[in-house]
Length: 230
Image (cartoon, rainbow, N blue to C red):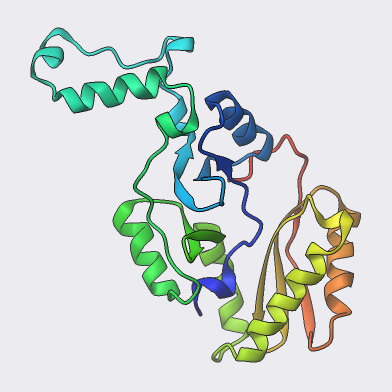
Protein backbone atom coordinates (compact mmCIF):
# COMPACT_ATOMS: atom_id res chain seq x y z
CA UNK A 1 0.00 0.00 0.00
CA UNK A 2 1.04 3.57 -0.65
CA UNK A 3 0.32 6.93 0.93
CA UNK A 4 -2.34 7.76 -1.65
CA UNK A 5 -4.28 4.63 -0.67
CA UNK A 6 -4.80 5.67 2.95
CA UNK A 7 -4.38 9.45 3.14
CA UNK A 8 -7.09 11.72 4.50
CA UNK A 9 -8.08 13.95 1.59
CA UNK A 10 -9.95 16.62 3.54
CA UNK A 11 -7.09 18.87 4.65
CA UNK A 12 -7.63 21.84 6.94
CA UNK A 13 -4.95 24.46 6.24
CA UNK A 14 -4.27 28.13 6.86
CA UNK A 15 -2.83 30.99 4.80
CA UNK A 16 0.64 32.22 5.72
CA UNK A 17 -0.58 35.81 6.20
CA UNK A 18 -3.28 34.82 8.70
CA UNK A 19 -2.89 35.99 12.29
CA UNK A 20 -1.69 33.71 15.05
CA UNK A 21 -5.07 34.20 16.74
CA UNK A 22 -6.76 32.85 13.60
CA UNK A 23 -4.45 29.82 13.78
CA UNK A 24 -5.19 29.25 17.47
CA UNK A 25 -8.94 29.47 16.89
CA UNK A 26 -8.77 27.05 13.95
CA UNK A 27 -6.68 24.53 15.90
CA UNK A 28 -9.20 24.60 18.73
CA UNK A 29 -12.37 24.57 16.61
CA UNK A 30 -11.15 21.66 14.46
CA UNK A 31 -9.61 19.79 17.43
CA UNK A 32 -6.26 19.29 15.70
CA UNK A 33 -2.71 19.96 16.87
CA UNK A 34 -1.12 21.27 13.66
CA UNK A 35 -2.06 23.06 10.43
CA UNK A 36 -0.33 23.05 7.04
CA UNK A 37 0.48 26.62 5.97
CA UNK A 38 -0.05 27.57 2.32
CA UNK A 39 0.33 30.60 0.06
CA UNK A 40 -2.35 32.21 -2.11
CA UNK A 41 -1.94 29.41 -4.70
CA UNK A 42 -2.25 26.78 -1.93
CA UNK A 43 1.38 25.72 -2.24
CA UNK A 44 2.73 24.22 0.98
CA UNK A 45 5.02 26.63 2.86
CA UNK A 46 5.24 25.23 6.36
CA UNK A 47 3.46 23.86 9.41
CA UNK A 48 2.10 25.72 12.44
CA UNK A 49 1.41 23.66 15.54
CA UNK A 50 0.23 24.12 19.09
CA UNK A 51 3.88 24.03 20.09
CA UNK A 52 4.60 27.08 17.92
CA UNK A 53 1.98 29.11 19.81
CA UNK A 54 2.52 28.26 23.47
CA UNK A 55 5.52 30.53 24.12
CA UNK A 56 3.73 33.88 23.77
CA UNK A 57 4.27 37.24 25.43
CA UNK A 58 0.48 37.79 25.67
CA UNK A 59 0.17 35.06 28.27
CA UNK A 60 3.59 35.52 29.87
CA UNK A 61 4.93 32.20 28.65
CA UNK A 62 7.69 33.49 26.36
CA UNK A 63 11.21 32.16 26.82
CA UNK A 64 13.32 34.43 29.02
CA UNK A 65 17.02 33.69 28.63
CA UNK A 66 19.10 33.56 31.79
CA UNK A 67 22.04 35.91 32.19
CA UNK A 68 24.52 33.29 31.04
CA UNK A 69 22.30 32.15 28.19
CA UNK A 70 22.04 35.73 26.92
CA UNK A 71 25.83 35.93 26.84
CA UNK A 72 26.61 32.56 25.28
CA UNK A 73 23.50 31.72 23.27
CA UNK A 74 23.58 32.08 19.53
CA UNK A 75 21.98 35.32 18.31
CA UNK A 76 20.01 33.39 15.72
CA UNK A 77 18.47 31.20 18.42
CA UNK A 78 17.58 34.19 20.59
CA UNK A 79 16.02 35.97 17.62
CA UNK A 80 13.98 32.86 16.76
CA UNK A 81 12.65 32.70 20.33
CA UNK A 82 11.71 36.39 20.15
CA UNK A 83 9.89 35.84 16.85
CA UNK A 84 7.91 32.93 18.31
CA UNK A 85 6.87 35.10 21.25
CA UNK A 86 6.09 38.35 19.41
CA UNK A 87 5.30 37.47 15.78
CA UNK A 88 1.82 38.44 14.65
CA UNK A 89 1.39 36.33 11.52
CA UNK A 90 1.46 32.59 10.96
CA UNK A 91 4.50 33.05 8.69
CA UNK A 92 6.40 34.50 11.69
CA UNK A 93 6.02 31.46 13.91
CA UNK A 94 5.53 28.48 11.59
CA UNK A 95 8.06 25.70 11.09
CA UNK A 96 9.45 26.17 7.59
CA UNK A 97 11.08 22.78 7.13
CA UNK A 98 8.27 20.34 6.40
CA UNK A 99 8.71 16.60 5.95
CA UNK A 100 6.46 15.57 3.05
CA UNK A 101 5.69 12.52 0.92
CA UNK A 102 4.05 11.83 -2.42
CA UNK A 103 0.99 9.74 -3.19
CA UNK A 104 3.16 6.86 -4.43
CA UNK A 105 5.37 6.82 -1.31
CA UNK A 106 5.17 3.40 0.33
CA UNK A 107 3.77 3.09 3.84
CA UNK A 108 7.14 1.71 4.94
CA UNK A 109 8.80 4.94 3.81
CA UNK A 110 6.13 7.00 5.54
CA UNK A 111 6.66 5.11 8.80
CA UNK A 112 10.43 5.61 8.57
CA UNK A 113 9.99 9.36 8.11
CA UNK A 114 7.63 9.58 11.09
CA UNK A 115 10.05 7.68 13.29
CA UNK A 116 13.18 9.47 12.09
CA UNK A 117 11.79 12.98 12.54
CA UNK A 118 9.47 12.16 15.48
CA UNK A 119 6.36 13.52 13.77
CA UNK A 120 2.74 12.39 13.94
CA UNK A 121 1.55 13.22 10.41
CA UNK A 122 2.99 13.87 6.98
CA UNK A 123 1.49 16.13 4.28
CA UNK A 124 1.10 14.44 0.91
CA UNK A 125 1.97 16.80 -1.95
CA UNK A 126 1.49 16.86 -5.70
CA UNK A 127 3.34 19.52 -7.70
CA UNK A 128 4.01 21.44 -4.50
CA UNK A 129 0.36 21.51 -3.42
CA UNK A 130 -1.01 19.54 -0.50
CA UNK A 131 -3.53 16.85 -1.51
CA UNK A 132 -3.78 14.84 1.69
CA UNK A 133 -2.42 13.95 5.11
CA UNK A 134 -1.16 10.62 6.41
CA UNK A 135 -1.20 10.37 10.19
CA UNK A 136 -0.13 7.65 12.59
CA UNK A 137 -3.83 6.83 12.95
CA UNK A 138 -4.06 6.23 9.19
CA UNK A 139 -1.20 3.72 9.42
CA UNK A 140 -3.02 1.91 12.24
CA UNK A 141 -6.19 1.86 10.14
CA UNK A 142 -4.21 0.24 7.30
CA UNK A 143 -2.77 -2.28 9.76
CA UNK A 144 -6.25 -3.26 10.95
CA UNK A 145 -7.52 -3.61 7.37
CA UNK A 146 -4.64 -5.70 6.07
CA UNK A 147 -5.16 -9.09 7.84
CA UNK A 148 -8.69 -9.40 6.45
CA UNK A 149 -7.75 -8.32 2.93
CA UNK A 150 -4.51 -10.06 2.07
CA UNK A 151 -3.28 -9.22 -1.39
CA UNK A 152 -2.01 -6.32 -3.45
CA UNK A 153 -4.28 -3.34 -3.93
CA UNK A 154 -5.38 -3.16 -7.53
CA UNK A 155 -5.84 -0.25 -9.88
CA UNK A 156 -9.58 -0.84 -9.62
CA UNK A 157 -9.36 -0.29 -5.87
CA UNK A 158 -7.57 3.01 -6.41
CA UNK A 159 -10.25 4.25 -8.80
CA UNK A 160 -13.01 2.94 -6.52
CA UNK A 161 -11.52 4.92 -3.64
CA UNK A 162 -11.51 8.06 -5.77
CA UNK A 163 -15.17 7.48 -6.69
CA UNK A 164 -16.13 6.99 -3.04
CA UNK A 165 -14.41 10.23 -2.05
CA UNK A 166 -16.00 12.08 -4.98
CA UNK A 167 -19.43 10.78 -3.95
CA UNK A 168 -19.05 11.81 -0.32
CA UNK A 169 -17.60 15.19 -1.29
CA UNK A 170 -20.69 15.80 -3.39
CA UNK A 171 -23.14 15.35 -0.51
CA UNK A 172 -23.93 18.58 1.41
CA UNK A 173 -24.50 16.71 4.68
CA UNK A 174 -21.00 15.22 4.45
CA UNK A 175 -18.99 18.45 4.60
CA UNK A 176 -18.33 18.20 8.36
CA UNK A 177 -17.29 14.53 8.32
CA UNK A 178 -13.56 14.05 8.88
CA UNK A 179 -13.11 10.86 6.90
CA UNK A 180 -10.63 8.43 5.45
CA UNK A 181 -11.34 5.49 3.16
CA UNK A 182 -9.37 2.27 2.72
CA UNK A 183 -10.31 -0.03 -0.16
CA UNK A 184 -8.94 -3.54 -0.62
CA UNK A 185 -10.35 -5.84 -3.29
CA UNK A 186 -13.65 -3.96 -3.25
CA UNK A 187 -14.03 -4.12 0.52
CA UNK A 188 -14.30 -0.64 2.03
CA UNK A 189 -13.46 0.63 5.50
CA UNK A 190 -14.62 4.08 6.57
CA UNK A 191 -12.57 5.80 9.27
CA UNK A 192 -12.73 9.21 10.90
CA UNK A 193 -15.29 11.27 12.76
CA UNK A 194 -18.92 12.17 12.22
CA UNK A 195 -20.99 14.59 14.27
CA UNK A 196 -24.04 12.33 14.55
CA UNK A 197 -25.00 8.68 14.17
CA UNK A 198 -27.31 9.51 11.28
CA UNK A 199 -24.48 11.28 9.46
CA UNK A 200 -22.27 8.23 9.96
CA UNK A 201 -24.93 5.86 8.64
CA UNK A 202 -25.63 8.14 5.67
CA UNK A 203 -21.97 7.81 4.70
CA UNK A 204 -22.23 4.04 4.86
CA UNK A 205 -25.37 3.95 2.73
CA UNK A 206 -23.88 6.30 0.14
CA UNK A 207 -20.80 4.10 -0.20
CA UNK A 208 -22.79 0.85 -0.36
CA UNK A 209 -24.66 2.20 -3.39
CA UNK A 210 -21.48 2.69 -5.44
CA UNK A 211 -20.84 0.12 -8.16
CA UNK A 212 -17.87 -2.11 -7.33
CA UNK A 213 -18.23 -1.92 -3.56
CA UNK A 214 -18.42 -5.44 -2.13
CA UNK A 215 -18.86 -4.56 1.53
CA UNK A 216 -18.54 -1.61 3.91
CA UNK A 217 -17.19 -1.55 7.46
CA UNK A 218 -18.12 1.70 9.15
CA UNK A 219 -15.58 2.78 11.79
CA UNK A 220 -16.65 6.42 11.87
CA UNK A 221 -16.64 7.64 15.47
CA UNK A 222 -19.47 9.95 16.51
CA UNK A 223 -18.05 12.88 18.49
CA UNK A 224 -19.14 16.41 19.26
CA UNK A 225 -17.24 19.39 17.86
CA UNK A 226 -15.87 20.04 21.35
CA UNK A 227 -13.95 16.77 21.44
CA UNK A 228 -10.21 16.83 20.67
CA UNK A 229 -9.55 13.85 18.38
CA UNK A 230 -5.85 14.15 17.40
